[in-house]
Length: 207
Image (tube, rainbow, N blue to C red; front, side):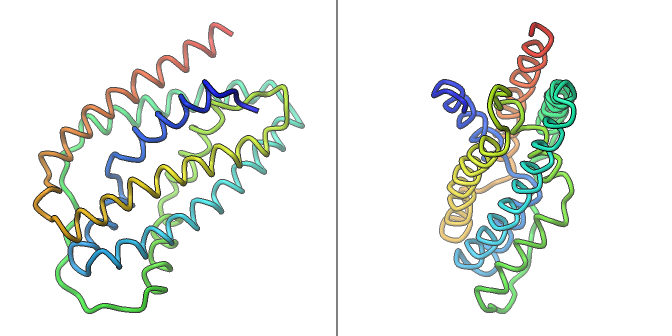
């Protein structure tokens, strides 16, 4: 299993990634702005369920790859590191504009959960992201499956906390969530992600 230092690095990287508004976060913010914090929290519950199923898919797939041809796993890590750099570049270039939503009637909490689940699964980049990010911290000397589950659970906890913060801010303090602040956050986090992806790629080559 990953050691404590690797887990700490993972949690920090997960926070940097999760705190940057992407397609899912914009839906959470838009729902909270138009329908209140409860709606945003319902969306989060759905995205968490979707994320859990995606992590199961990634864990099963990577375990199969390692068992059949372990050498391919290093290439997966290298491609994943390149994807993280690309993701960081897009964050730096993002405008920070948030999706807007007009006032709408409230609906049952379960309806928001279903919406969050579908929104997450409708974005194939989410599944690809898990497949690129989680393997960077896997120790091939032991089974990959439980490690992916552990790392995935940690990421969901971090993402759930940051998403909930956005929902509360958007629902109760709307003036704090502005495009300029989001743009600044994008640039800082994107730069960190580019540096982290480059470092991971160099580690792969050094190994």
